[in-house]
Image (tube, rainbow, N blue to C red; front, side):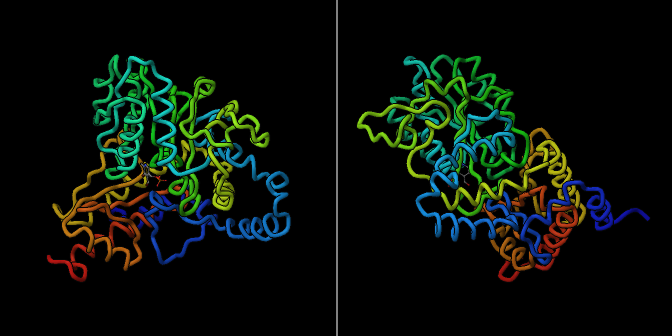
Length: 404
Ligand SMILES: Cc1ncc(COP(=O)(O)O)c(C=O)c1O
């Protein structure tokens, strides 16, 4: 008799090297957590670290902690912890602010870095909306115009008038991975800068920022990097652009001598010039602690498992769910897939509500997309099999309130 999917899952989990990292997370056995592409799970050691930050560093050391506990230098120190995960050498990433704010800094800076004769900014037409809203405002402020282009069309759309393009590495809705090396090279060939949004790829797959010559990049830390709700985002400024990087938000934290309190602004050297104001220390230090789970983890291994998990989930869905009830909007081709599977189906809101009620936590993108994020450090093959099985049961039985 051939192996069942449950048996296959158990066999794959037994040989999964990354499975040992699961115990680093606070997870309950009753839940399959497939929403780490929205909010990563809590690393189990973070509460104790935060208790120390609050009671000792804040409660006892108080103001001294800016220096003695390393609070002041946290944005660049934590940036250097994120750097290897996204393929960047140290000194090019600062942590702080939200992704939206960093999109603003990056797009305005890119517009200022490009020549005066370039008046177009290409923006991923399928982008997570905040990037589009912010880029539009940044373009207006810098005298550029926005040209919405699907990522696949970026290479052809870039020309002598293109200042920069803002592209998502992985699409938030479909889970489609875009060709970062190819698009970056095409933009450079046209004399334009490449600005990447890594929210859905950092911590899920290799990015290779330095290797592929990316100019500027932004990303959040609360998804695959498990930094916690609202944890600060980051900004990457390639070393070769740092001297000319002209921040539209030149706050005192990016001044070369912040405590001189001089009226004139003088930008600090390095990625630090991406800083703005006083960092959100509690969130930032929770993120720093959360990054410990990456010690000894190679992002290439994460990618290998991510693809195996999403393949296996899709295989189980095809086997369990009757033909025609769901449609995958995530590409089958590995090169075009991130670390989530998006399935469209009828009555998707009711289906997702029922899945969550039965312990399979994904999320919904209206009107009809069920998103299942696979975070290889704490999701296993048995989780993928259970999620597909419960989905098939929900679709067969019809969730409460679901018109069949
Ligand atoms: C691709 C992408 N860009 C930007 C954002 C917005 O990030 P923030 O709310 O930190 O500004 C998100 C949030 O999920 C996202 O997925």
